[in-house]
Image (cartoon, rainbow, N blue to C red; front, top):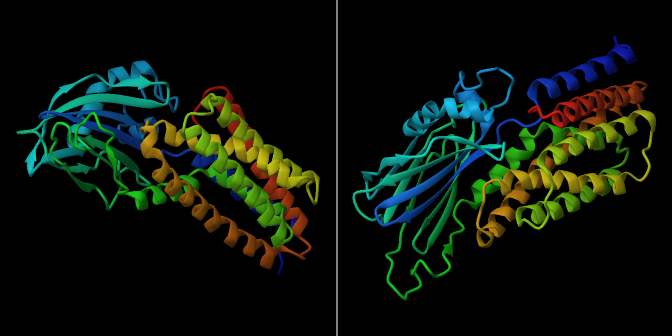
Length: 373
């Protein structure tokens, strides 16, 4: 017995809006550290994702408002440092390097919790082994981007569940040689596969970006239409992703995230009121520029030196595209094979689109007011 058209639409819409609101728009993406050697010392700056810290340290969010304030970070500094003590290990030629100095944790730019530490090794390191488990065990997993500058070597790697240990060899420094620290450091392509995975993970856990893509899929009646809008979206967000990461375009994070939410509401509402939305490729390109700025914010916060960004940026963007296709293709096939031509088609499209529009409006409101969704 076939379910009534209204019941099918209501069930689909309820599932979408519940998933969107419960999941939230931006689960914790990743944390990072940058380490630089100076004699026997390693100076390390940790940039920790607030959402991941809240999950790992239940009492950190004292007022329970879903975000970390500067005073909460200051009060919880000891807990944050203990988390790093337990979850980050660094050894030089097999001998542990010991944390000898630590600055209190602080909220940096409202979006990262920063901790600066000095690790002292038995001797000037010529080989380092990092083991990073801090925050990787939280529900859903968490990635930790590590960047190390040692003499003439620049190394980058993504630590995540199942890949928590990484070693880097250090070339000895000879004055006047290519290893002289005054020379431009060599850029290792290590970990590019990890940056690809990071891009896949970013799009698959960025439910607001997925909501936008799904709104495009539901409106595409032909494969040609879908290919056109997906290409427009890809070109647009690739441009602003690169411009944002290379610090050529600046936009307030809250404004960008709010406009991304508005883009979801706009496209979804257009699906509701028009069977075939007008100028969808052009509209998608315009909104894709906003989504690219959102992607770039995730990478720009890491603070990579300009010369080291390009390979990782390419791998990250390729991962985003792969993740996007992993959603778009199956979704279009399901919609085409199961929905097209049925009596319930228009009702389901409108119901799901209305739910996506509600999620977009919800995200717009909470982001514009400064909440964390």
